[in-house]
Image (cartoon, rainbow over all chains, first blue to last red; front, top):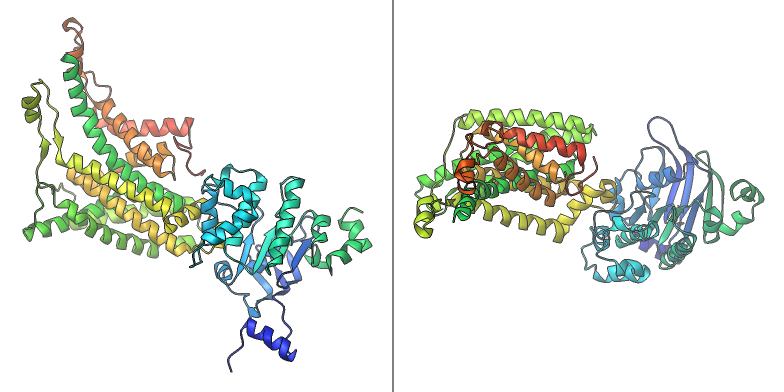
Amino acid sequence: METPSYDQKVILLFSYGRYILTFLAATELTGGYGSTNIIEDISLSVERGQIAVIVGPNGAGKSTAMKAIFGMITLRSGQICFKDKDISRLPPQKRVANGMAFVPQTRNIFPALTIAENLSMGAYLRKDNITAAVQQIYELFPILGERQNQLAGELSGGQRQQVALGRALMTSPELLMLDEPTAGVSPVVMDEVMERIMEIAGTGVAVMMVEQNARHALQIADIGYVLVQGRNRFTGSGPDLLANREVRTSFLGG
Amino acid sequence: MELLNAAIVLANFIVVPALSYGSQLALGALGVTLIYSVFRFADFAHGDTMSIATMMAIFVTWWLQAQGVGIAPLPIGLLAIPVAAVGTGILLLVIDRLVYRHYRRARAPLITFVIVSVGVMLMLNGLTRFIIGPGEQRFADGARFIISASEFKQLTGLREGLAIKTTQVITFATAWAFMAFLFWFLKFTRTGTAIRAFSDNEELALLSGISPKRVVTICWLLVALSATIAGTLYGLDKVYKPFNYFQLLLPIFAAAVVGGMGSPTGAVLGGYLIAFSEIAITYAYKRVAGYLLPESWQPEGLLQLLFTDYKFAVSFGILVVVLIFRPTGLIRGHPG
């Protein structure tokens, strides 16, 4: 018998209650650059329409964990299942084609290309007409529409983040991974970016993000992970973590 | 009248030759800048790529001539360009597969690529000399002049003539047609935008699903086309000799660097700047002075800043000055 697809399994799940699915499940990842391990036995997961937030002190391996999920560093052990398929060995481009998108913390735009070209490059793998998708991005981030023919390199930090998000969304991802989407933007823009991220998750996209601004991010998190020294320290829903005294005093500044 | 005669002398010996030489350099520099923007190294083999491409065009020309084909007043070399470009494209892809890909996969430092390209240069150079020989080949046919100096004198009644060679006009027209195509391709097609994106931020291009293989292939094909056009036009306009093409590397590099490495517009600007400087500095202005200065002021010397044999010193000088005072070039290309 052929293995049923993810969607078929969802139906099966409801009809028989036999399958237990996680949309993205990274289990016991160990790896890093060179011979030293930066992350050890880290497990992270997220479901469709959920926001997962990874917080922790500097050097906790937050970004490395994200890169590991995207296949940008070599794993020494561990497994990554996406839509119920083992993708641990796929190169990053194949993961993009499978529905994953990643916004790195730095160098996340094409500075020498216009905003419109940045977005069109996000849709590079799509065969369909992208005009409607571009319009959606302009509705989500009106400033990008106004400046569509301006070089992305000439924009302010906040606008660059919007271009970066827009480019990633143009791949029409099912899983959106964001590495510090609010780094270097003003508090007003930060609120806006967070709001947009919630909207994106509202459309059924799974969002996994690393945030420096832990308190703010955990407020919108369906699930939160606190990493310390390359390991899982606390895992729980956003409100639970915010209520946890130890988490508050150690990582959220009281 | 004297002023007009002086202007004609300048046009005949500086402007017209510099426009065609500049177009050839611009095409060569476009190739160098394309390679730089995708692979990030300065390709020392580019002069010899142009040389071997021209050699292929010469063989096709000879074959067509033997078949009795002629497109007078245009030279047959023009018909040979597409065929030679395909041959050069295949050659460059084979070299990439056998040589450069290995170093890309090994993530070799950029200086390694430069040295490897010197190796490729020597190999291509040897191959060309082995096949066609080190001597000169003239393969321009068709009408030699659009207007010759004597025709011009008869037509205008001026003492000085302005000669315009067919190959000069063809060079200029073909070069601009190709440049228009290249700029359109890079700006308005999906593949062209992907090449620019790849050149701009390689990691993010991979994260967008842009296939590096495709970018590499298209880039080499564009380089092959530009090198074939540049080399064949240079050979038609002057003469084909492998050593001259090797020497062209310096003014071509100078043009690419002056314009700003990685900037196609800069490469075109740089090509013309280098060509005009080289010709203007090595030209003997005695004849111009003859028209402009009163008899008692006539100079005894040739009024030549630099002897023609030292023309490469001009490119070299400009290169040094630009690298000291404006290393990014006229149009800011890629930082390092």
